[in-house]
Amino acid sequence: MNKTFKDSKVRLITMTGLMAAMTTIFTAYIFHVPVGTNGGYIHFGDSIIYLAAAMLPMPYAMLVGALGGGIADLLTAPMWMIPTVIIKMLIVIPFSSRRNTIMSKRNLIAPIISFFISATGYYIAEAILFGTETAILSAFSGSFIQSGGSALFFYLAAAAFDRAGVKRNLFQFEG
Image (cartoon, rainbow, N blue to C red; front, side, top):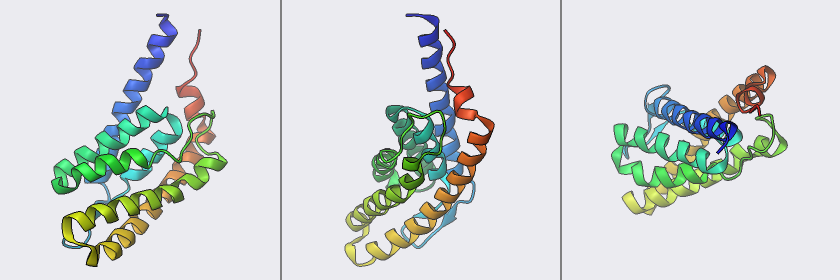
């Protein structure tokens, strides 16, 4: 194994851990707003997951979502942990990390698709946990606010990071 490959794996694992920790903090503590009586809350942790999905290969981004979201729910609303791990892994699928920039046509639309994945996933989870009568209203209204805020934060961060060349500089490996 050459040094470049080893360094790139270490860099990917380090970024995965860092972004999972940031996801946990942004989900559980920063702008954490409880909603309703079901233990749910609005947060901007998804924006970090979106950034991870646009910067890291998919398996690593899925780990960011699963670990960051799962740990946040373990700390704040444990009943949601299992659905969150699954849902947060799925919301990275619409994104692409194949360019030197974070923002692309695909990543511009991806947060909107992720909203539907998240809202549908939490609707199913809430229907299982609490019944279907209230699930659709709370799942989609909370997801709309959360996903909208996370998308806005993602767009702003992506524009700033692309202007600074963060992705290009961070993942440029020398031979």
